[in-house]
Length: 91
Image 1 (tube, rainbow, N blue to C red):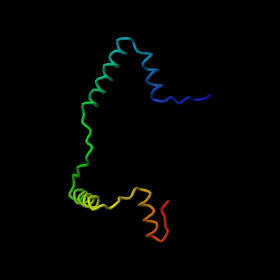
Image 2: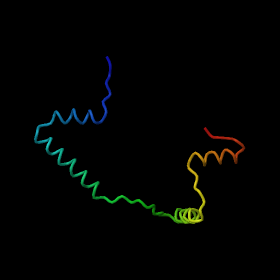
Image 3: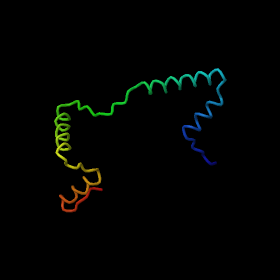
Image 4: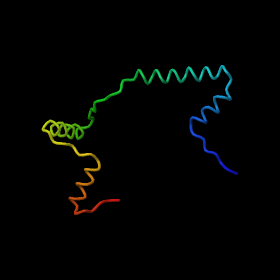
Protein backbone atom coordinates (compact mmCIF):
# COMPACT_ATOMS: atom_id res chain seq x y z
CA UNK A 1 0.00 0.00 0.00
CA UNK A 2 1.43 3.37 -1.02
CA UNK A 3 1.65 5.94 1.73
CA UNK A 4 0.99 9.55 0.77
CA UNK A 5 2.75 12.28 2.64
CA UNK A 6 0.76 15.47 2.66
CA UNK A 7 2.26 18.88 3.08
CA UNK A 8 0.96 21.22 5.74
CA UNK A 9 -1.17 23.11 3.22
CA UNK A 10 -2.90 19.94 2.08
CA UNK A 11 -3.47 18.88 5.70
CA UNK A 12 -4.89 22.29 6.53
CA UNK A 13 -7.25 22.17 3.56
CA UNK A 14 -8.38 18.68 4.45
CA UNK A 15 -9.17 19.72 8.02
CA UNK A 16 -10.79 22.93 6.79
CA UNK A 17 -13.21 21.00 4.56
CA UNK A 18 -14.27 18.85 7.52
CA UNK A 19 -15.26 21.88 9.64
CA UNK A 20 -18.72 23.37 9.86
CA UNK A 21 -19.14 26.84 8.29
CA UNK A 22 -19.23 28.36 11.79
CA UNK A 23 -15.92 26.76 12.74
CA UNK A 24 -14.41 27.77 9.39
CA UNK A 25 -15.31 31.37 10.25
CA UNK A 26 -13.62 31.05 13.64
CA UNK A 27 -10.47 29.68 11.98
CA UNK A 28 -10.53 32.52 9.46
CA UNK A 29 -10.86 35.11 12.24
CA UNK A 30 -8.03 33.47 14.17
CA UNK A 31 -5.74 33.54 11.13
CA UNK A 32 -6.61 37.19 10.52
CA UNK A 33 -5.75 37.98 14.15
CA UNK A 34 -2.41 36.17 13.83
CA UNK A 35 -1.68 38.06 10.63
CA UNK A 36 -2.47 41.45 12.15
CA UNK A 37 -0.33 40.61 15.23
CA UNK A 38 2.67 39.88 13.03
CA UNK A 39 2.12 43.06 11.03
CA UNK A 40 1.95 45.12 14.23
CA UNK A 41 5.18 43.64 15.60
CA UNK A 42 8.08 45.82 14.53
CA UNK A 43 10.97 44.04 12.90
CA UNK A 44 14.29 44.95 14.46
CA UNK A 45 16.68 45.54 11.59
CA UNK A 46 19.67 46.68 13.61
CA UNK A 47 21.57 44.17 15.70
CA UNK A 48 21.85 45.14 19.36
CA UNK A 49 24.55 43.18 21.21
CA UNK A 50 23.51 41.97 24.66
CA UNK A 51 26.64 40.59 26.32
CA UNK A 52 29.93 42.38 27.05
CA UNK A 53 31.76 40.14 24.56
CA UNK A 54 29.16 40.76 21.86
CA UNK A 55 29.38 44.51 22.48
CA UNK A 56 33.16 44.44 22.15
CA UNK A 57 33.06 42.34 18.98
CA UNK A 58 30.35 44.57 17.48
CA UNK A 59 32.49 47.64 18.21
CA UNK A 60 35.50 46.02 16.50
CA UNK A 61 33.34 45.10 13.51
CA UNK A 62 31.93 48.63 13.27
CA UNK A 63 35.42 50.17 13.36
CA UNK A 64 36.66 47.72 10.71
CA UNK A 65 33.79 48.59 8.36
CA UNK A 66 34.32 52.32 8.95
CA UNK A 67 38.01 51.94 8.05
CA UNK A 68 37.06 50.43 4.70
CA UNK A 69 37.97 46.82 5.38
CA UNK A 70 35.93 44.47 3.20
CA UNK A 71 34.26 41.78 5.34
CA UNK A 72 34.51 38.18 4.17
CA UNK A 73 31.51 35.97 3.46
CA UNK A 74 31.31 32.40 4.78
CA UNK A 75 32.99 30.84 1.73
CA UNK A 76 35.84 33.38 1.85
CA UNK A 77 36.36 32.70 5.57
CA UNK A 78 36.58 28.95 4.90
CA UNK A 79 39.05 29.58 2.08
CA UNK A 80 41.25 31.78 4.27
CA UNK A 81 41.20 29.22 7.09
CA UNK A 82 42.20 26.47 4.65
CA UNK A 83 45.11 28.58 3.38
CA UNK A 84 46.29 29.34 6.90
CA UNK A 85 46.12 25.65 7.77
CA UNK A 86 48.22 24.64 4.80
CA UNK A 87 45.29 23.61 2.63
CA UNK A 88 43.56 21.54 5.33
CA UNK A 89 39.77 21.74 5.25
CA UNK A 90 37.27 20.22 7.67
CA UNK A 91 34.51 18.23 6.02
